Image (cartoon, rainbow over all chains, first blue to last red; front, top):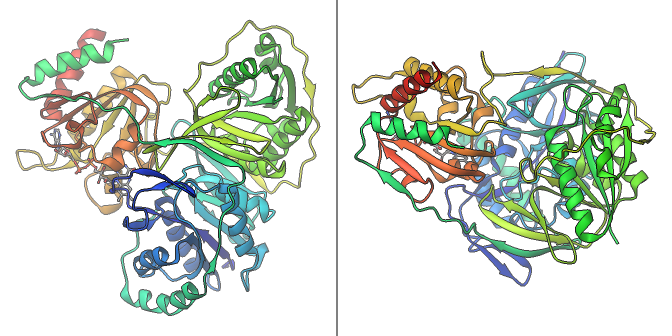
Length: 270
Length: 342
Ligand SMILES: Cc1cc2nc3c(=O)[nH]c(=O)nc-3n(C[C@H](O)[C@H](O)[C@H](O)COP(=O)(O)OP(=O)(O)OC[C@H]3O[C@@H](n4cnc5c(N)ncnc54)[C@H](O)[C@@H]3O)c2cc1C
């Protein structure tokens, strides 16, 4: 028996991890140099959440999938051109600031308000998904805060797997210390799941899915509500690149025996 | 005037506090001494007696939430427990370990108390006030921040403070009552995803990283995945090192390429993997690209073995890079280590 799920995925956009980042401080606080022109991608762990959500929705006919994303409208549009080709979803864009430095509590407040107001969302059927940590702030708090604001007290973080059962209950695997998973069984929706890598590969691009998605994504972007995020008393004393620069000794002329001896000595060194 | 509360929890035995909890206790003692603030310690455990006695010498006010529902980590029960402890202590600064257990709930609890949270704190400083250091953009940008709002929750990364140790003594603990919501989640246990031995060892001195080169065609035109697996596992056996991996190597399982069956995504180091703390790290057959190396932020002493003199490690990312065949070097290393053991 299929369960009808209302899955909301919160996913931000982040600079492509291959880019060089340089912090700068402006009148509005810290940010990244040329942040608006750095190529961006969907936040990787949140992207895992989106792919897992799509697979779950496909297995449970009648389910709905929303992607809620806060970022500058123009940047969201760029990233959506690719993401929209992978799976079908309804985009709920929020036109707001980019980057990891705004306060997570303000971000969560805006996200929770937006989700609570989604037309057609049945909170009793809600699975709130996202990445367990972002690639910008990397704090692992936003989704939790959104969950609390929505009154959801079954929350899981570092999730790699969900197995939904016919009776609507589900088993969740969460990452814990020492390379293990904690296994829990939850009676059913609503719940919050902050995803780690999951088990699914990135879906291939399908231009037809992209075209169908774009028909609703473009109008949604045009209507995106502009929002600002209050600093909430958060102050940055300093923001800097790491100072440490290593001088690498490149060893080219030792035999494997000599290298092995050097390494064994190094491993044994206290 | 700040009131400091350190939140702690028991380990899998149910009675002893985790090492990360004891590290948070040290941080709390240091901060309380510097700010001349009062210190309380909250304990979450099925039975807090042993944990409390281990904390007796802190002379802090001890509060506990105990009982069967708190034997296991779970959002609804842990959030209720921490909320009750914070209300009882009337804390303005709350320090806690960034363990899986407390990281799951700390933000929710901060919200319930009308407070704020910052996580992955690597240092606490400041002259008159409290300033916290943490990394942004996956360990690429380091920031020091402060907040006016209270209570302020600071989750400390493991390994940033020494674990508190003091002589055990009988201690007075105030039991804090908790009102629990209806429980909808049952924790059924722990599962280790990797086959055979546990390869992730957070307490190991050495991190050994395997990259995709181990399963690539070698100079003879052949793939030697089985031999690679034997060399890596042999090394882990003799050294007790923790095993990390590059993303490319763990991704191969899903892409039908040769795999090392004992590796999973939990071994992955980097941008979308772990950022472990070890004194030393040895990278083998891994190119040292930036999305991988950001996961090495807290590895102090780094060496790499790579065939390519232009690999990322040679550009300021490792202390020593050996331009050599890792198959040959690791075979020798293993035989030297075995001889040393015998
Ligand atoms: C969004 C995003 C997130 C990412 N997150 C991560 C992450 O979390 N972690 C991560 O690791 N990567 C991550 N990456 C990928 C990263 O950019 C690299 O592609 C990856 O780290 C490469 O893995 P590798 O060095 O093992 O493989 P390769 O680049 O294939 O390098 C193999 C290396 O093995 C060497 N080699 C081969 N044979 C031998 C031998 N016999 N002896 C010695 N050396 C040998 C070669 O010289 C080469 O340097 C991410 C990328 C993106 C876009």
